[in-house]
Image (cartoon, rainbow, N blue to C red; front, side):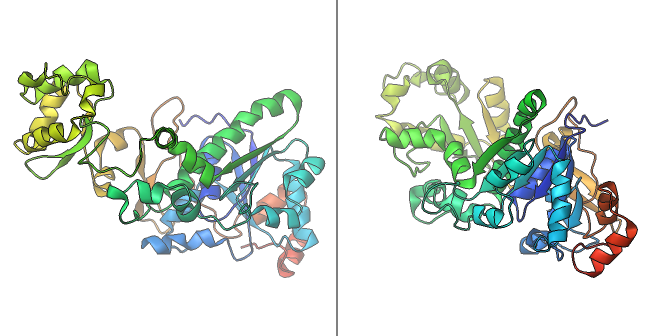
Length: 403
């Protein structure tokens, strides 16, 4: 049975696109009851799967399952006072509110922290923005391609030689930032339990990118400049090599002096163990090209399988550089429940990627299909005390969408 440490916690999820919904998905997978609020026609992230070449309809919507599975939902017209009344009643019962709408939009709706903390002092208010809540571009639109990748420097400095910007993986920044928001909101539950008071939680795609690249930021500050090329790495023992069969491998020796001699034994160059040019990390920095000229031809002499055996026997950290298509069926990913199969509403089997935190046992999350527009509305409104007559009338008036 899946462990659910947030059972009993209610989250109002007022999010769109990628990062915000993914944060709600993590909280839902941890056991929280997550209720997603969206426009009557659905938020645009429902159809993002089309961009990825996937189906995005009510019977099969894999990308929607990735972000909004295990939630309930209610589409509301928040421009109508009656729609906002429903929202306020949900907030009265909630532990956490999360949103990635821009600050100005939240303020206009009365859902900014300053207004909400007065009406709902218990609320943990989690806000995910593109560039942060302060500064000259705080209200700029900030998808991960611009806020996480472009402005942080990652898009140009993480590619070979910095000549052409990398094509950023879809929503990579979104999903990492989602984990930070979910974790921060969950951390505030302790304060809430002890004092009854909420908290203001702010994360941004830009801030996440800077954190994720913290080591490179420090290196740059101290004059170790990026971008890099594999032909001139920080260390040839932390670098990529092509094997005889065309497979690439990553060697990652962090404790240089400890593993230099064992590494040289693995590659059959014991004669270099006492070579003063290479046997300390400080000395090696002056002879990186010379060492690369030695190592590249050596790795081309054996297939990856043979290098894998030798490097494993030598306790040298390494791995095959996989394609993403390889990871989908990787036995290590499957064994830990990182990828698993679920059933679409039309009965077809599909692949889902699990949120990365496991509690108690490494197994897939028990998956509940993402809510179709309006399918939970009647139940949620009943729970808030609304009658069938009111629900039907408000649905007819365009306040709430039901099925």
